[in-house]
Length: 81
Image 1 (tube, rainbow, N blue to C red):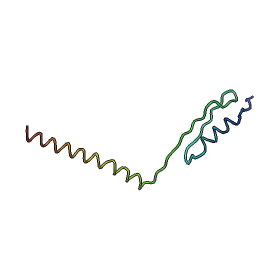
Image 2 (image 1 turned 90 degrees about the vertical axis):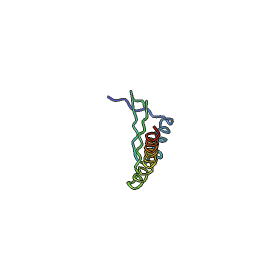
Image 3 (image 1 turned 30 degrees about the horizontal axis):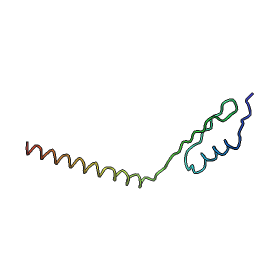
Image 4 (image 1 turned 60 degrees about the horizontal axis):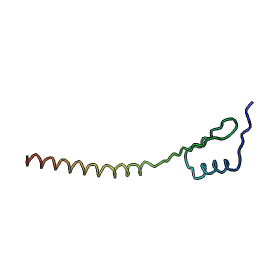
């Protein structure tokens, strides 16, 4: 027969702290021999498609500028060399 779980106020506070503020995700409570030994929190963040596209566009622009600068410096090397 399984042992009853022993939860004191400290563990209840710890569990509550992990659940508070969690929008999307899970809280996993690991029990060994009727005692809580571990709490794992996995948080998911969800973004709408429009903001994801804007963020992707912002990161691509510096990369494109950098590659254009490298190409122009390569051309200068070829002309001078």
